[in-house]
Length: 188
Image 1 (cartoon, helix red, strand yellow):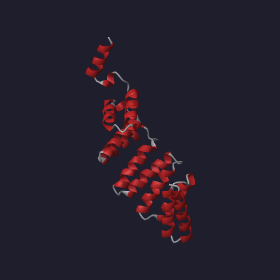
Image 2: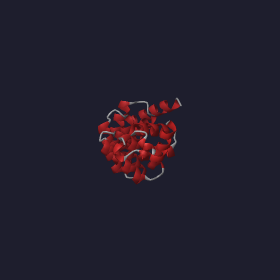
Image 3: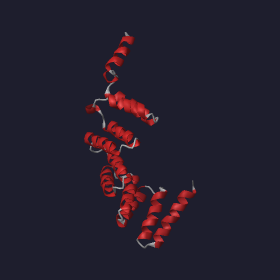
Image 4: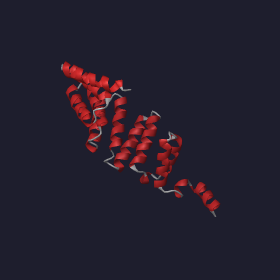
């Protein structure tokens, strides 16, 4: 009887034998092991209506890895449709826009991610990077200060604060943050 069940699963397709939750868990495990082909295969077995926001995010990540940025953004938007509070989809969308040099769009999506997760220092750091690319040094400074307030052990935040303060003509503060950066990186 068991053999018959296995053969039927193969014949009918795995999604009839495993629920969306099990397929999603398996896909996540394969993704964690960098087995992207198996991840994709499992995620595509899940009915679109049954995919979780995380499933859509993983699909977006897979397409991003393949260099298919517009398809990745499409899947991130699907994740947000499924769960509007899923900040990672906004964050990943912003990262793609940064790579593409669309800094204003990147900043928009980093701000959306921050509204959903105000305690993640990396969101503020990346927002600051977008502002720097747009020449908005005061906005970058404010985002970096928020980032360093949340976590003061990220060397890149201190380095960029030194850079911003130098651009703003505040050499003393620039030197202080550069010293902080040097202290943090000397431990490596």
